[in-house]
Image 1 (cartoon, each protein chain N blue to C red):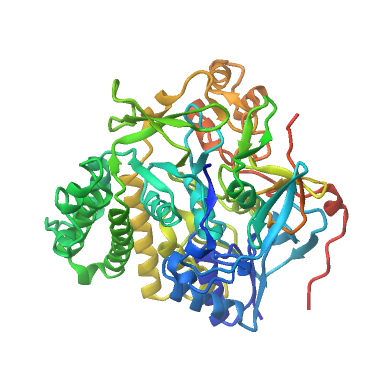
Image 2 (tube, rainbow over the protein chains, first blue to last red):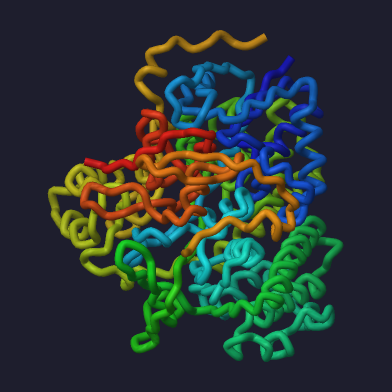
Length: 514
Length: 99
């Protein structure tokens, strides 16, 4: 019988497990968390004994069905609190099971017939003066705490960055009782609309309409806009306009021909409209072409500096103003968690994601990848890829419908990237003393000085001289930023992918179970 | 105050709290079973607990185990990610300084 190890139990990993089980495989599903779901379907702790978890979970019933089907399957071994710390050729998968960062975890070595990597992504946060202050959170942290523990990170909060992820984070914060003062999308409305619209326009049948307006969700400048607390740009107004555009694009296109694409787009629009309507209730202003460019405070964040941006994210001089907050939640996109794929020998594409073929197989035979590590496209696309990866990892052929769903996800990833790019002008927010590497506290000035030194020809010399990227996070947070600021390439090679204690390393691995 | 836990009586998810206690540098801090150490400390009004080499305060940043900003010593084990480690009743947490 085929054995498949799946690393990561988020939307991609769970879909992969489900498919591999259907195909008859023996599945081991691993995740560092205590429960499956990943970041998107982050579950409440079992100890909370929640009677209505569906009230804070998007798509709960479908997820719950999938979760049970997989975890209760007789051929599925569910390894919670399991960390993959290394992968060798074979693949040989080195696992630690037990309390996170503990000392007494059990070592295992798995040698499956096929490996599916579904390790996901974490927020990419660009540095800005004061971003190291306590009270500055990644948007993902705020969401994890609100959804996963029912902890709101602040009372007066600004959410800033770029991308649709800011909306569910805002919804989660509002629901948990934070007052979200504003959601700031750094990209201009023009960039966002052009990006989202780019694919249907290519199909050549663009037609304007007011789909969201018709459905009563409030188009730009309609009731929702007027009722916004600051008079303009309420989230429902702006997003209603955006969703109206998307809706019209979908309606105007040849839906039959587009198949899965239309389905994908409709699903996403529906999800985002749900958030928009939620935000209208909480009266959260949604502003485009604006950013948090600095955080200030004595030992913690007390205020943020908000500014208007040009299309390239450079600050419009004179537009800065300060807003008193006790928390700020930031996400400028996502960084795929690539170290295990790199350790397994998988090649990366020019755009910095794992290269996969039609079956989701990487450049390494027997090693498959799915979800955000192949491109940032959200949970639905991740699940579509996971389903193909799990099925094909057992030697099956993907169906045409499955491939269409994957293609739709890829198209969505492309639109997302075009709609929410990182503008090159962001580095203008930096000051000489701005911390770039949070672990080692490397300043922007130190990094620039080292990068200008002709003896720092390679990124390794640069790292050794500035220590940027050499701290405990192993450049997970500053890596892409340092690469961008110094014109080098981000490295994802972390041979020891997760911390392991010397005592644990000294113990021989346990024999395979069963 | 800043971070706080949704009060159980107001929480739409309908949860049942089982209180637990940890100590942080000797001070008793109350949380509920199921929370992470970071969640317990945040909800108890502690926004930071680690000091960097320069002495700057740090707490939770990424919240999902990627940034290693929230490291604490738990029951004598150094460098534990507080955002990932479940809080167990009676856990003895010591804050860390990186030297």
